[in-house]
Length: 385
Image (tube, rainbow, N blue to C red; front, side):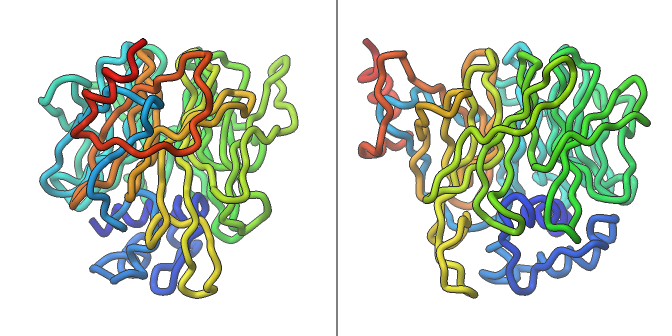
Protein backbone atom coordinates (compact mmCIF):
# COMPACT_ATOMS: atom_id res chain seq x y z
CA UNK A 1 0.00 0.00 0.00
CA UNK A 2 2.75 2.49 -0.78
CA UNK A 3 0.66 5.33 -2.14
CA UNK A 4 -1.63 5.27 0.84
CA UNK A 5 1.35 6.02 3.02
CA UNK A 6 1.71 9.37 1.30
CA UNK A 7 -1.55 10.38 2.95
CA UNK A 8 -0.28 8.92 6.19
CA UNK A 9 2.86 11.02 5.89
CA UNK A 10 0.89 14.17 5.13
CA UNK A 11 -1.60 13.84 7.94
CA UNK A 12 0.18 11.76 10.56
CA UNK A 13 3.26 13.96 10.53
CA UNK A 14 1.06 16.71 11.90
CA UNK A 15 -1.70 14.74 13.53
CA UNK A 16 0.58 12.53 15.57
CA UNK A 17 3.94 14.18 14.79
CA UNK A 18 5.70 10.84 14.77
CA UNK A 19 8.23 11.32 12.00
CA UNK A 20 10.96 8.75 12.27
CA UNK A 21 14.25 8.15 10.44
CA UNK A 22 13.71 6.85 6.91
CA UNK A 23 10.17 8.18 6.66
CA UNK A 24 10.30 11.95 6.42
CA UNK A 25 7.76 14.37 5.03
CA UNK A 26 8.75 17.37 2.99
CA UNK A 27 7.10 20.16 1.10
CA UNK A 28 7.23 18.29 -2.19
CA UNK A 29 4.95 15.60 -0.80
CA UNK A 30 2.30 18.20 -0.11
CA UNK A 31 2.55 19.37 -3.71
CA UNK A 32 1.79 15.91 -5.05
CA UNK A 33 5.36 14.64 -5.52
CA UNK A 34 4.28 11.36 -3.98
CA UNK A 35 6.83 9.00 -5.46
CA UNK A 36 9.78 10.14 -3.35
CA UNK A 37 7.79 10.12 -0.15
CA UNK A 38 6.29 6.77 -1.02
CA UNK A 39 9.69 5.18 -1.35
CA UNK A 40 10.71 6.45 2.07
CA UNK A 41 7.59 5.11 3.77
CA UNK A 42 6.93 1.80 2.01
CA UNK A 43 8.64 -1.44 0.99
CA UNK A 44 8.53 -2.94 4.48
CA UNK A 45 10.86 -0.39 6.01
CA UNK A 46 10.94 -2.27 9.31
CA UNK A 47 10.01 -0.69 12.61
CA UNK A 48 10.92 2.79 11.39
CA UNK A 49 8.38 2.72 8.56
CA UNK A 50 5.72 1.16 10.76
CA UNK A 51 6.34 3.76 13.44
CA UNK A 52 4.68 6.44 11.36
CA UNK A 53 1.12 5.81 12.41
CA UNK A 54 -2.23 7.16 11.64
CA UNK A 55 -3.90 4.54 9.46
CA UNK A 56 -1.16 1.97 8.79
CA UNK A 57 0.50 -1.16 10.18
CA UNK A 58 1.85 -1.39 13.69
CA UNK A 59 1.45 -3.30 16.93
CA UNK A 60 -1.02 -6.10 16.31
CA UNK A 61 -4.01 -6.42 18.60
CA UNK A 62 -5.16 -9.92 19.45
CA UNK A 63 -8.72 -8.75 20.01
CA UNK A 64 -10.93 -5.72 20.46
CA UNK A 65 -11.90 -5.23 24.07
CA UNK A 66 -14.08 -2.65 25.72
CA UNK A 67 -14.73 -1.38 29.22
CA UNK A 68 -17.39 -3.24 31.17
CA UNK A 69 -20.65 -1.26 31.31
CA UNK A 70 -19.12 1.53 29.19
CA UNK A 71 -20.05 0.03 25.82
CA UNK A 72 -22.39 -2.65 24.52
CA UNK A 73 -23.21 -4.51 21.33
CA UNK A 74 -19.88 -4.34 19.48
CA UNK A 75 -20.15 -5.16 15.77
CA UNK A 76 -17.75 -5.79 12.89
CA UNK A 77 -18.85 -4.24 9.58
CA UNK A 78 -16.09 -5.09 7.09
CA UNK A 79 -13.72 -8.01 6.57
CA UNK A 80 -10.83 -7.23 4.23
CA UNK A 81 -8.79 -10.34 3.41
CA UNK A 82 -6.20 -8.11 1.73
CA UNK A 83 -5.43 -4.45 2.15
CA UNK A 84 -7.19 -2.34 4.76
CA UNK A 85 -10.51 -0.60 5.42
CA UNK A 86 -10.42 2.78 7.18
CA UNK A 87 -11.96 6.26 7.52
CA UNK A 88 -15.61 5.25 8.10
CA UNK A 89 -18.54 7.66 7.73
CA UNK A 90 -22.19 6.83 8.27
CA UNK A 91 -25.04 8.51 6.38
CA UNK A 92 -27.76 10.61 8.13
CA UNK A 93 -30.13 7.64 8.32
CA UNK A 94 -27.56 5.43 10.03
CA UNK A 95 -28.06 2.78 7.36
CA UNK A 96 -25.27 3.32 4.82
CA UNK A 97 -21.52 3.29 5.38
CA UNK A 98 -18.76 4.80 3.24
CA UNK A 99 -15.07 4.13 3.85
CA UNK A 100 -11.66 4.11 2.23
CA UNK A 101 -9.96 0.85 1.37
CA UNK A 102 -6.93 -0.71 -0.30
CA UNK A 103 -8.59 -4.14 -0.55
CA UNK A 104 -8.40 -4.18 -4.38
CA UNK A 105 -5.48 -1.88 -5.13
CA UNK A 106 -2.38 -0.32 -3.69
CA UNK A 107 -4.30 2.97 -4.11
CA UNK A 108 -7.02 3.79 -1.61
CA UNK A 109 -10.50 4.01 -3.11
CA UNK A 110 -13.98 4.68 -1.71
CA UNK A 111 -16.60 1.99 -1.04
CA UNK A 112 -20.19 2.07 0.22
CA UNK A 113 -22.24 -0.64 1.87
CA UNK A 114 -25.24 -1.16 4.09
CA UNK A 115 -24.25 -0.82 7.73
CA UNK A 116 -25.88 -4.18 8.44
CA UNK A 117 -25.26 -5.96 5.14
CA UNK A 118 -22.25 -7.52 3.46
CA UNK A 119 -22.46 -6.37 -0.19
CA UNK A 120 -19.89 -3.66 -1.01
CA UNK A 121 -19.91 -1.22 -3.92
CA UNK A 122 -16.74 0.51 -5.10
CA UNK A 123 -17.51 4.10 -6.17
CA UNK A 124 -14.03 5.44 -7.07
CA UNK A 125 -11.05 3.89 -8.85
CA UNK A 126 -8.01 4.80 -10.91
CA UNK A 127 -4.36 5.50 -10.16
CA UNK A 128 -5.11 8.05 -7.43
CA UNK A 129 -5.85 7.88 -3.74
CA UNK A 130 -9.22 8.81 -2.24
CA UNK A 131 -9.68 8.92 1.52
CA UNK A 132 -11.46 10.56 4.48
CA UNK A 133 -14.99 10.42 3.00
CA UNK A 134 -17.93 12.03 4.80
CA UNK A 135 -21.62 12.02 3.89
CA UNK A 136 -23.47 15.28 3.23
CA UNK A 137 -26.32 16.12 5.65
CA UNK A 138 -28.87 15.08 2.98
CA UNK A 139 -27.00 11.82 2.31
CA UNK A 140 -26.79 12.46 -1.45
CA UNK A 141 -23.13 13.46 -1.79
CA UNK A 142 -19.80 12.59 -0.25
CA UNK A 143 -16.93 14.97 0.43
CA UNK A 144 -13.46 13.43 0.51
CA UNK A 145 -9.74 14.09 0.13
CA UNK A 146 -7.99 12.96 -3.06
CA UNK A 147 -4.68 13.36 -4.86
CA UNK A 148 -6.26 12.70 -8.28
CA UNK A 149 -5.30 16.22 -9.46
CA UNK A 150 -1.66 15.78 -8.43
CA UNK A 151 -1.92 16.93 -4.82
CA UNK A 152 -4.27 16.41 -1.89
CA UNK A 153 -7.44 18.47 -2.36
CA UNK A 154 -11.07 18.37 -1.27
CA UNK A 155 -13.55 16.83 -3.72
CA UNK A 156 -17.26 16.04 -3.91
CA UNK A 157 -18.93 13.06 -5.52
CA UNK A 158 -22.45 11.64 -5.72
CA UNK A 159 -23.13 8.56 -3.58
CA UNK A 160 -23.40 6.65 -6.86
CA UNK A 161 -19.80 7.61 -7.73
CA UNK A 162 -20.85 10.06 -10.47
CA UNK A 163 -20.18 13.77 -10.94
CA UNK A 164 -16.84 14.29 -9.16
CA UNK A 165 -16.17 17.96 -8.44
CA UNK A 166 -12.93 19.52 -7.22
CA UNK A 167 -13.52 22.05 -4.44
CA UNK A 168 -10.01 23.15 -3.44
CA UNK A 169 -6.78 23.44 -5.41
CA UNK A 170 -4.40 25.27 -3.09
CA UNK A 171 -0.63 24.88 -3.09
CA UNK A 172 -0.64 22.80 0.11
CA UNK A 173 -2.28 19.52 1.10
CA UNK A 174 -5.95 19.95 2.04
CA UNK A 175 -7.56 17.13 4.00
CA UNK A 176 -10.37 15.95 6.27
CA UNK A 177 -13.56 17.71 5.08
CA UNK A 178 -16.56 18.15 7.39
CA UNK A 179 -20.01 19.48 6.39
CA UNK A 180 -21.94 22.36 7.87
CA UNK A 181 -25.41 21.16 9.00
CA UNK A 182 -27.11 23.06 6.14
CA UNK A 183 -24.85 21.38 3.57
CA UNK A 184 -23.73 24.71 2.10
CA UNK A 185 -20.18 24.82 3.44
CA UNK A 186 -17.24 22.56 4.18
CA UNK A 187 -14.55 22.97 6.80
CA UNK A 188 -11.21 21.26 6.23
CA UNK A 189 -7.57 21.47 7.29
CA UNK A 190 -4.68 22.73 5.20
CA UNK A 191 -1.27 21.30 6.05
CA UNK A 192 1.88 23.38 5.80
CA UNK A 193 4.89 21.04 6.20
CA UNK A 194 7.32 23.96 6.46
CA UNK A 195 5.49 25.36 9.47
CA UNK A 196 4.70 21.96 11.06
CA UNK A 197 1.15 23.07 11.71
CA UNK A 198 -2.34 22.92 10.27
CA UNK A 199 -4.85 25.61 9.35
CA UNK A 200 -8.65 25.40 9.53
CA UNK A 201 -10.54 26.74 6.52
CA UNK A 202 -14.18 27.05 5.46
CA UNK A 203 -15.29 27.01 1.81
CA UNK A 204 -18.67 28.05 0.35
CA UNK A 205 -19.83 25.28 -1.99
CA UNK A 206 -21.87 27.60 -4.19
CA UNK A 207 -18.76 29.71 -4.64
CA UNK A 208 -15.67 27.51 -4.04
CA UNK A 209 -13.42 30.46 -4.74
CA UNK A 210 -14.56 31.97 -1.43
CA UNK A 211 -12.52 30.49 1.41
CA UNK A 212 -12.09 31.67 4.97
CA UNK A 213 -9.29 30.95 7.44
CA UNK A 214 -10.71 30.47 10.95
CA UNK A 215 -7.68 29.32 12.96
CA UNK A 216 -4.95 26.76 13.51
CA UNK A 217 -5.73 23.10 14.01
CA UNK A 218 -6.33 19.70 12.43
CA UNK A 219 -9.18 17.24 11.82
CA UNK A 220 -12.18 19.60 12.09
CA UNK A 221 -15.64 18.27 12.91
CA UNK A 222 -18.69 20.53 12.51
CA UNK A 223 -21.33 20.24 15.23
CA UNK A 224 -24.78 19.16 13.98
CA UNK A 225 -26.12 22.15 15.94
CA UNK A 226 -24.11 24.36 13.58
CA UNK A 227 -22.59 26.65 16.19
CA UNK A 228 -19.26 24.91 16.85
CA UNK A 229 -16.35 23.19 15.13
CA UNK A 230 -14.26 20.74 17.17
CA UNK A 231 -10.67 20.03 16.22
CA UNK A 232 -7.31 18.97 17.59
CA UNK A 233 -4.39 21.25 18.25
CA UNK A 234 -0.97 20.73 19.81
CA UNK A 235 -0.13 22.50 23.05
CA UNK A 236 2.84 24.09 21.33
CA UNK A 237 4.22 24.01 17.80
CA UNK A 238 5.93 20.73 16.96
CA UNK A 239 4.50 18.97 20.00
CA UNK A 240 3.04 15.48 19.87
CA UNK A 241 0.66 16.23 22.75
CA UNK A 242 -2.65 17.09 21.10
CA UNK A 243 -5.79 18.22 22.88
CA UNK A 244 -9.39 18.81 21.77
CA UNK A 245 -10.54 22.37 21.09
CA UNK A 246 -13.71 24.04 19.83
CA UNK A 247 -14.47 27.25 17.96
CA UNK A 248 -17.90 28.76 18.59
CA UNK A 249 -19.65 30.87 15.95
CA UNK A 250 -21.57 33.94 17.08
CA UNK A 251 -23.45 35.83 14.36
CA UNK A 252 -21.35 33.99 11.82
CA UNK A 253 -18.05 35.07 13.37
CA UNK A 254 -15.65 32.54 14.94
CA UNK A 255 -14.76 33.15 18.57
CA UNK A 256 -11.29 32.52 20.05
CA UNK A 257 -10.75 28.75 20.45
CA UNK A 258 -11.57 27.00 23.71
CA UNK A 259 -9.67 23.96 24.96
CA UNK A 260 -12.20 21.29 25.86
CA UNK A 261 -10.03 18.31 26.78
CA UNK A 262 -6.35 17.85 27.53
CA UNK A 263 -4.22 15.55 29.64
CA UNK A 264 -0.65 15.09 30.78
CA UNK A 265 -0.70 11.34 30.12
CA UNK A 266 -2.49 11.13 26.76
CA UNK A 267 -2.87 12.83 23.39
CA UNK A 268 -6.42 13.31 22.11
CA UNK A 269 -7.05 13.37 18.36
CA UNK A 270 -9.75 13.25 15.64
CA UNK A 271 -12.88 14.47 17.48
CA UNK A 272 -16.33 13.60 16.12
CA UNK A 273 -19.68 14.99 17.32
CA UNK A 274 -22.64 12.92 18.47
CA UNK A 275 -25.82 13.35 16.43
CA UNK A 276 -27.34 15.66 19.05
CA UNK A 277 -24.17 17.73 19.46
CA UNK A 278 -23.83 17.03 23.19
CA UNK A 279 -20.80 14.71 23.15
CA UNK A 280 -17.54 14.11 21.32
CA UNK A 281 -15.88 10.82 20.39
CA UNK A 282 -12.13 10.82 19.76
CA UNK A 283 -9.00 8.65 19.77
CA UNK A 284 -6.94 8.63 22.94
CA UNK A 285 -3.23 7.97 22.31
CA UNK A 286 -1.13 6.41 25.06
CA UNK A 287 2.55 7.38 25.01
CA UNK A 288 5.40 4.97 24.36
CA UNK A 289 9.17 5.21 24.29
CA UNK A 290 10.67 7.25 21.44
CA UNK A 291 13.63 5.17 20.18
CA UNK A 292 15.55 8.31 19.21
CA UNK A 293 15.07 10.60 22.20
CA UNK A 294 14.39 7.81 24.73
CA UNK A 295 11.52 9.89 26.06
CA UNK A 296 7.86 8.97 26.28
CA UNK A 297 5.81 10.52 23.51
CA UNK A 298 2.29 9.90 22.16
CA UNK A 299 2.74 7.15 19.57
CA UNK A 300 0.50 4.38 18.33
CA UNK A 301 3.19 1.83 17.51
CA UNK A 302 5.64 0.30 19.94
CA UNK A 303 4.08 0.01 23.37
CA UNK A 304 1.67 2.85 22.71
CA UNK A 305 -2.03 2.35 22.16
CA UNK A 306 -5.00 4.09 20.57
CA UNK A 307 -8.44 3.75 22.11
CA UNK A 308 -11.85 5.26 21.41
CA UNK A 309 -13.27 7.50 24.13
CA UNK A 310 -16.15 9.92 24.59
CA UNK A 311 -16.60 13.13 26.56
CA UNK A 312 -19.35 15.70 27.09
CA UNK A 313 -19.12 18.79 24.90
CA UNK A 314 -18.01 20.83 27.90
CA UNK A 315 -15.11 18.45 28.60
CA UNK A 316 -16.68 16.61 31.53
CA UNK A 317 -17.17 12.90 32.06
CA UNK A 318 -14.55 11.30 29.81
CA UNK A 319 -15.10 7.57 29.34
CA UNK A 320 -12.88 5.19 27.40
CA UNK A 321 -14.90 2.71 25.34
CA UNK A 322 -12.18 0.41 23.99
CA UNK A 323 -9.37 -1.09 25.98
CA UNK A 324 -7.28 -3.14 23.59
CA UNK A 325 -3.58 -3.68 23.03
CA UNK A 326 -3.69 -2.45 19.45
CA UNK A 327 -5.06 0.52 17.54
CA UNK A 328 -8.61 1.88 17.43
CA UNK A 329 -9.04 5.25 15.76
CA UNK A 330 -11.00 7.47 13.30
CA UNK A 331 -14.32 7.49 15.20
CA UNK A 332 -17.55 8.75 13.64
CA UNK A 333 -20.94 8.93 15.34
CA UNK A 334 -24.20 7.60 13.86
CA UNK A 335 -27.71 8.94 14.37
CA UNK A 336 -28.56 5.75 16.31
CA UNK A 337 -25.80 6.57 18.83
CA UNK A 338 -23.37 3.95 17.51
CA UNK A 339 -19.72 4.94 17.10
CA UNK A 340 -17.99 3.53 14.01
CA UNK A 341 -14.21 3.33 13.98
CA UNK A 342 -11.16 1.71 12.39
CA UNK A 343 -9.57 -1.17 14.30
CA UNK A 344 -6.26 -2.91 13.70
CA UNK A 345 -6.79 -6.56 14.60
CA UNK A 346 -4.52 -9.48 13.83
CA UNK A 347 -3.31 -8.88 10.26
CA UNK A 348 -5.88 -6.39 9.00
CA UNK A 349 -7.65 -3.07 9.45
CA UNK A 350 -11.44 -3.22 9.38
CA UNK A 351 -14.46 -1.15 10.38
CA UNK A 352 -16.20 -1.81 13.70
CA UNK A 353 -18.83 -0.06 15.80
CA UNK A 354 -19.83 0.06 19.43
CA UNK A 355 -22.71 1.66 21.29
CA UNK A 356 -21.84 3.67 24.40
CA UNK A 357 -23.72 2.69 27.52
CA UNK A 358 -23.97 5.84 29.57
CA UNK A 359 -27.07 6.56 31.65
CA UNK A 360 -26.99 9.89 33.44
CA UNK A 361 -26.37 8.31 36.83
CA UNK A 362 -23.43 6.24 35.61
CA UNK A 363 -20.05 7.16 37.15
CA UNK A 364 -16.97 7.74 35.02
CA UNK A 365 -15.03 4.51 34.63
CA UNK A 366 -11.38 4.46 35.56
CA UNK A 367 -10.34 1.05 34.28
CA UNK A 368 -12.25 -2.16 35.12
CA UNK A 369 -11.10 -5.43 33.66
CA UNK A 370 -11.58 -5.49 29.89
CA UNK A 371 -14.13 -7.74 28.25
CA UNK A 372 -13.28 -9.18 24.86
CA UNK A 373 -15.64 -9.35 21.92
CA UNK A 374 -16.33 -13.05 22.44
CA UNK A 375 -18.08 -12.24 25.72
CA UNK A 376 -19.90 -9.20 24.34
CA UNK A 377 -23.32 -10.79 24.77
CA UNK A 378 -22.64 -11.49 28.42
CA UNK A 379 -21.48 -7.93 28.95
CA UNK A 380 -24.56 -6.56 27.24
CA UNK A 381 -26.84 -8.65 29.42
CA UNK A 382 -24.99 -7.53 32.55
CA UNK A 383 -25.38 -3.90 31.46
CA UNK A 384 -29.16 -4.07 31.29
CA UNK A 385 -31.08 -2.38 34.14
